[in-house]
Image (tube, rainbow, N blue to C red; front, side, top):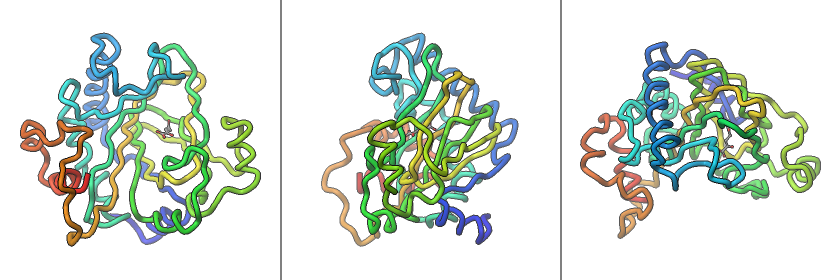
Length: 264
Ligand SMILES: O=C(O)CCC(=O)C(=O)O
C-alpha cells in the first residue's frame, strides 16, 4: 500500500500527501453529507457545544467536532474512516493495533477570516522535550482529506522530531501567526489526503475564505493487549457506546472503537 520511502518520509518529515486518494463518487458523497451537517449546525442550531468558533464568539465556525454524535451523524462519514485509502495507509504507517481518537470537519468560515496560531496539538506553546517527540514518531496519524482545493494547512516539515529553535520560539511567543522559517503550505486538490504527525508545528490560515470542506480524522496506537482496561467507560462521547452506533460500524472499525471503549 505504501512504499518504504513514503513511510520513511512520514517518520522523517512528519507528513505524506496521497494524491487522488478519494474518487469523484467519494468526494460527492462526503460533500453532500457535510452540507447536511452544516445545515443542522448553522441553520437548525444543533450541536452548538461541539463547534469550532472563530475567536470564541458564537457567530461563525471553522470546524465541527465529534461528528459521530447522533444529532448530526452521517453514516458515509463513519464509513470514510474505513476507506481503504485511509485505513490501509494508517495501518501501514503505525500498525494494525489502533484506537479511534477524533473525527472532525474543517470548513471555511462564512463571514470572518480564519487564521489560527502556530502550535503542536499536544502543546500550544510548542514546548515538548525531544525524547517525548521521538516517542511519538509512529504513535498516531492525523489526516486532512480535502473535498475542495485546500491550501489552509501550514506546517514546518521535520519539526515533529525536535525541540523549537530560538527563531520558532520567538514567533510562537511574540507573533504566533507570522511566517515561520521553513514553513510549507500543504496544497491539496479535491480527493488528496495529507497524513501527518500532530506534533509538527502547524497552523490554519484561510484568510480569503476559500471554500473548504475537509475531513480531519485522527487515530492512535492502542495500548498493548496486556494492559488492563479502564474500569470505567470513557465519559466523553458516550454515544460511541450506543448499539445504534456500534451495530452499524464497518467491521474493520470495530477494534478501533472497542479500544476506545476499553482504554478511553
Ligand atoms: O485548519 C487546519 O488545517 C489546521 C487545524 C489545526 O491546526 C488543528 O485542528 O489543531
